[in-house]
Image (cartoon, rainbow, N blue to C red; front, side, top):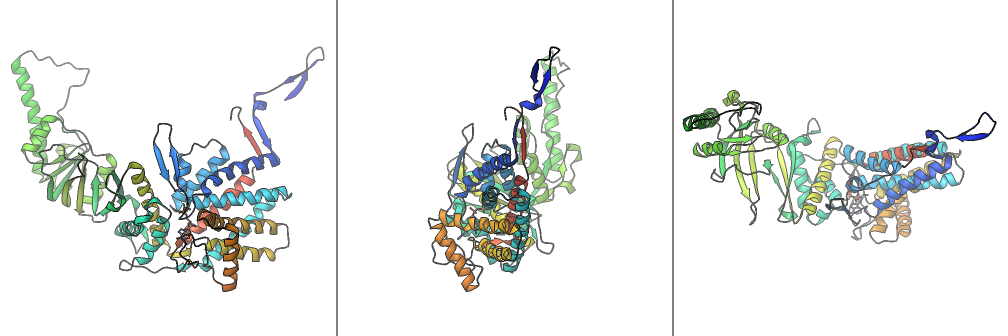
Length: 535
Ligand code: ADP
């Protein structure tokens, strides 16, 4: 806004478009941002832990999702505010990096900002707060490494992996079947893992789900499952010792392009054309058969007449197989993808022990199972459940459990959950704060207080008095010099999380603390918000 004068010396105000923007400056900007971030964190707080609540989200077109997974909750929410969106991304990055701990990271970031808000009120500058947080974060990471344990496992001793996977599953809908689910997740990861290189290729694990049955019917299939059926009901239901041909061209006769016109003037001409077409189909099927193939998976469609020939020639086929699935089949069976009939050769065929179509219940729903593939490393986790919401949440939970297993294969260090690791860090940070004389010591203490929020939330969600529980476990950790004392969320009368077998990966916990710290600092450093009008 600026004041100018006209030729008679009368003042008037010029407002540039820029000035119509909304602007928040200084402390106001920081406070508004903190409020937005804390609102998001507050939403997720009640979902933390094994007794945490689920959230139900309804999309504009009526799709319902029920979940406990922080990343999914935030993903499905329509978040407008720019800072709140940062929280959504925070949870997403924890999901991408680690795959678990997505609720915890947001709760911790919210707690850090709440503490920062208090410090700002007390007149401490944001930069000093950031410096304090940074130092405290370093102490926390060092403490986590100090209290971490290593788990030894091998292909024959997978018990420790299963235990960690079941901690992840204990807060999800699937917790009733967590022993079975954890075993499925671990078996799936181990069957594709390269333990020497500590590498897991998730592309080789396919997740498939079908409504029906119960979660208990979920199974791990040694091979690939496709949500498809044979192209014709008269094809054999099962092929043993399958030689698989993967085609990316349709079983159709070449058609004249729209620009051209084909006039058929006599019945003979029509018959000739029909014969020609039939010959195409026979030739196509012959080329497939000649290579020795006894099962065909085609990415495109099949003309009805070509189906007839396929049935006659006893060559079972599946049509409209998705591109990703064609690639997965190629990886699993060792087949080469063939783009033209003329290029089919016996060497391009893949092998599988058995290809079968399975029908479920009384419905017409069918799936194709391609088992005992040449490359035995491809597996499919097949999730069943009473309705779509349960199947989807089952898939997400298993994904989390598989991520945790993969993280353990990469780095076999663990810490114990139930807030015990957070309290141990909080105590270490408080000790460290006592050695600091500058103003940062307030920020460092605030970081310790923020860490205490995790066990408090766990206690609150389990119906326990949060402050009493926190002071109890703090006192016990100090008195017993035992950093494994945490919140007994399940009411098992066992506060030692090592004995209660509540495991979390060290990498996951470090990432949670570092990412939450980074985001809190990022938000604190913003002291000017310029938003276009209407935002
Ligand atoms: P996230 O999405 O962050 O993984 P969860 O809802 O899965 O969130 O909750 C994880 C928290 O619950 C962790 O702090 C973990 O230590 C704790 N937890 C899980 N199982 C137990 C248990 N049996 N007893 C106490 N705490 C548990």
